[in-house]
Image (cartoon, rainbow, N blue to C red; front, side):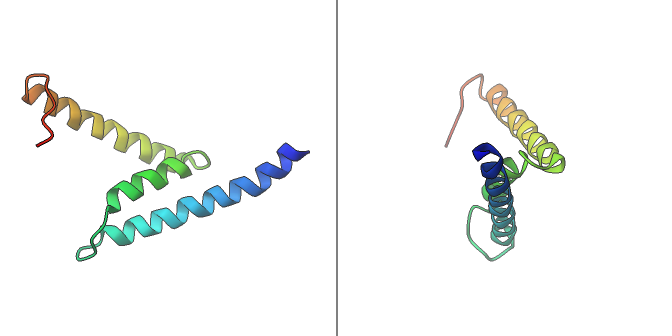
Length: 84
């Protein structure tokens, strides 16, 4: 019983948090507004991916592209990561 109640309370709160972060991330990504918009969007997709397949696909796609960028950077620097 407690698990069912927790599910009906936690899921809508998680969805609202994810959507709020997604909106904030989009606003922070607009030109002229400073802030980590892309990071907030990726974080919100991670939260929303627990409930929505479209968010899971988007989050997986972004994660895959990020891994490609990291691997390309490693190959370009001879296996060493250059954070400069």
